[in-house]
Each structure stands twice: as structure tokens, then as C-alpha cells.
View 1 (spheres, one colour):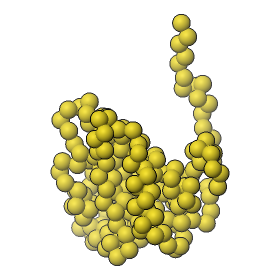
View 2 (cartoon, one colour):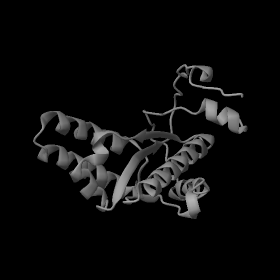
View 3 (tube, one colour):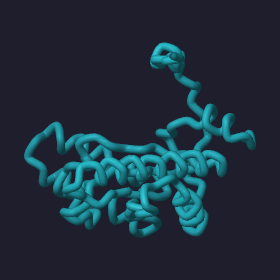
View 4 (cartoon, helix red, strand yellow):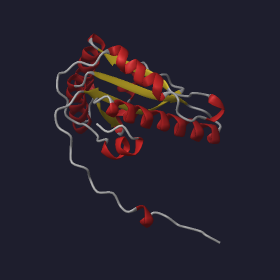
Length: 187
């Protein structure tokens, strides 16, 4: 892997298939600690983390399988079952939350800071040849999932990071030229 920040940013990929190579818990915690240098307003450091690792990861997968059997919506049950399987294939699963706040501006600042934290983590993990899949979607709003993970009512889930070593790097997908997204004002 390249050492320049530019190269790491451009080479990083979302990894969806993990192998069984172990990742040391301490290595993950160090990456999280390094990611905490993300910019954040008034140094609130609003990220909160729940990491499922080892037996805890196995328990998460089993609880998700049980949840899939309790959900009455067949489509939702199927998706939860698939997530349970994905969770069992990763070496660790990290749920990242942000405290909810009635002050809309503070909530936006904190959500942005947590997103910067996650991006730092993604890049740091890639540099260490650890693949990450950042999951959002309906699962993070599912009450049963929130209960399994011990997420409090005053917290919003920003995402679930699924970690693992990998064998194959997906090909890059093209990006739209930034000039197409840029409104330049020079006078």
C-alpha cells in the first residue's frame, strides 16, 4: 500500500467479503484512538462506540438470527438474517453513535464530526490492510437491533463498521469529475 494520504484516499475500497485472518483487538482500539483526532466543534468528541469482538461478535450474530425470527415483516426478517450472517463473517463489528441533541446546529456539528471520525478510521484501517464495510440503512433504526446493541434512546446510530482482512480488492468505480459538482465564483 502507498504511504501518501492522496494514494490511501484514492486506493481505499469498501470491502464486503472477508477472510478468516485475525485482527488483534488492540490494533482496532489503536486505530479508533488515532481516528479520534478528527475535527470536532468545541472538542466535544461526540462519537460513542460499541465494539463486538471475539465471543461478543458471535453473540451479536446469534442475537440477530433470533431477532430475524421475531420480526413479523418477512422482507425485514430476511434482511436481518442476512446481516446476522455478514456480522459472523467479520472479525469485529463497531456501532458508532452520536448523542441526540435538541439543538439542531449542535446535532449537525456532532454528526459531521462523527462522520469525519469514521472517515479517519476507514483510511487508517486501509493503511493497515484491514477492510471495512460502513453499513447504514434500515437496520440502524430497527428497535430490536438497537436493544441488542445496548443503544440508548438519546443516541443516534451513525453506522456499523464491519471489519476484516481480505483477499481481493474491488476495482475502483468511476467518480464524476468534480468540476461537474463545482460552482466556482471568482468575482
